[in-house]
Image 1 (cartoon, rainbow over the protein chains, first blue to last red):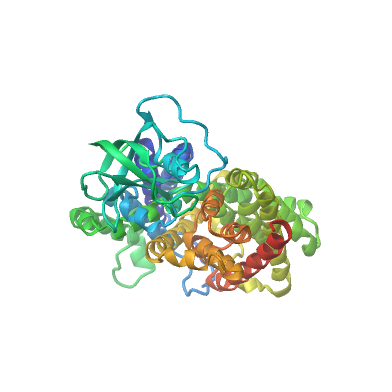
Image 2: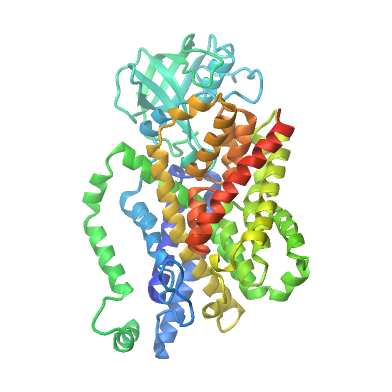
Length: 244
Length: 332
């Protein structure tokens, strides 16, 4: 691979990273705390690429070749020499194209339906009472934790409001769902609540549900899926950060 | 400007006309831009979309660490004289291995950063066994990883100690095994003359650029494979073996290889696998930073395929054995 193409690939990769991390698109893939590191590495790659391009132009003016000069590099066990620079670098175009052309969306119902564990046991044995508010905003994961591991004690008598997306339940109805990341979308963990008395909605519709806790769905088990009695339901746009 | 060089290429090196890489790149870009609508249509499928999202997120998540790694390897090549390593590490390779393994605690990155750094160390004359011990231990025992393990297992502080001991033991024993059985020809290191520039800064840029382009390509292969397996392998079979003492350990060790998640996050995933024993979770966290699909792909690209096909399985076996041993000692 010629040095000028190497430089273009560096600029493209750096540019793709900058493109998603300047806006909010990167939140579809990684956690918000990654933003400064993404910006820094994007800038580093673009700078390396631009400097390499300047090198190429200077060399060309002096009449030198732009092939990576590498005459004594032995042929390796994969049967290619490195005379043309690292060939594997072509593959870096794949994520660049995926980001610019396809822009894969945040994970949704398909990924959530595959995740069979629902309620991770909470760190504390007993959750503190919900903050004041009527309805009170809670996260889907918090609701699941309280309903499954505290037998709903802290939810009883409260009206809650949660935002999530629709994952169809193969046995009927749908789960109000939200995914949480530890680091990137490859480690997403789903929290699901069965919506009771809710209209049928297509998968991946984002909704804000107002409702109350009702017993059922099992407790003290990591695969239990609790219930929520839906009182009010509004379709909403996907939140800025699709994960909790 | 590049036209001039191009003409020279075709005249001196190649009989007849062959399109150069710049032309290939231009045509590729054009075709993809024209085909964009069609591509978006093809990817309008939940399984493919999920795979694409996981692929991008693995790559996006790993890139800053890879950039950190190649910047460090460039700095090692350009600014640290080889004599420094002779002074810093014991002369006896058998002693240098544990010292280098323990030094892994100071590189605050995940596994993607440590591959180019280990490669840079070897090409600057550090004995491969020591560089490999560093390669294995750095992503597993650095302070960020241990702190996140502590946070992920709030009631189990011994988990942090167990992870540290099992990971360090695996790294050091792998280093010693390399001393005894390893062959220099499995490693593609050798002098990197073509990467030495006009001045240290130039060398730094050439090394960092070369290492990034090379390792980045293999990171993409690893990310693709991991995303594919992530979508294809059903997760139900995990629950089926959770109760079995040995199978559950092997299952989570295998899952760590498949998932290829960053060592700074794997503790949270391990903690979420609630049906499994602590020892099985320990195996997940010891194996993951040392053997996973994207890492093996990076190793194959950086060192050679012969190296990766020997080194990764041996590391896997040792990591599982040390997890069982340490788990049985500290976690029961």
